[in-house]
Amino acid sequence: MELVETLKQDGIAKGLCRLWQMKFRKGMPVKALIEMYIKGIDFCIAEDYPTLKFIRENFKGICEPYGAYIDDEVDLVNAPDVVLNGDCKAMLKYNQFAVSRIYARHKSELAVNVEDHAYVTIDAFDNSVLVVATAGQNAQVIVNLYGNAHLTAIGDGITRVVKQKNTY
Image 1 (cartoon, rainbow, N blue to C red):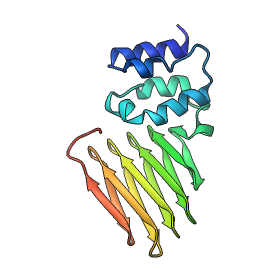
Image 2: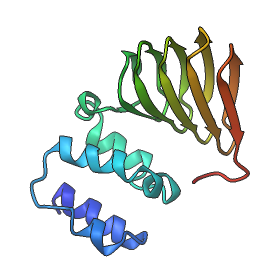
Image 3: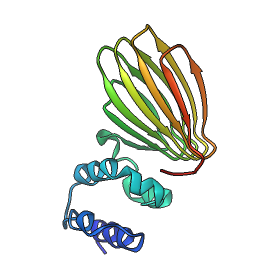
Image 4: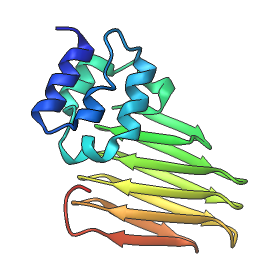
């Protein structure tokens, strides 16, 4: 079965709504699939869709240019949307007027530095570990912690929100 059809059928089995089912098209490029993954990340995380094993087998090495990483060492500056799956080790830096959303899953470890007027939202799941540091009075970071995710916060402008559940 083609990759796109496999993803669609797995999504249907996990309760993917009709509107999202219709977004899957035969022969979709990886870029479009990753854009769908990031846009629908709440469903993907809540339903473990696709599984980490599936992501490793089918997307490792081809999804990174589009913001999704699997078991990678990542060093980015002002990346707009980032999803870290598996055992990622990441150094993420945001400055000036950057705005970003970061999703840390599984056993990912992140160091995130935010300065100037940058605004970053981080959703951390599973057993991810974050160190977030801010510089200056205008940097803003919101960190939503789910499951066993752990945060060390250094600086002002960091809001920690502990969710009493494992997913969205």
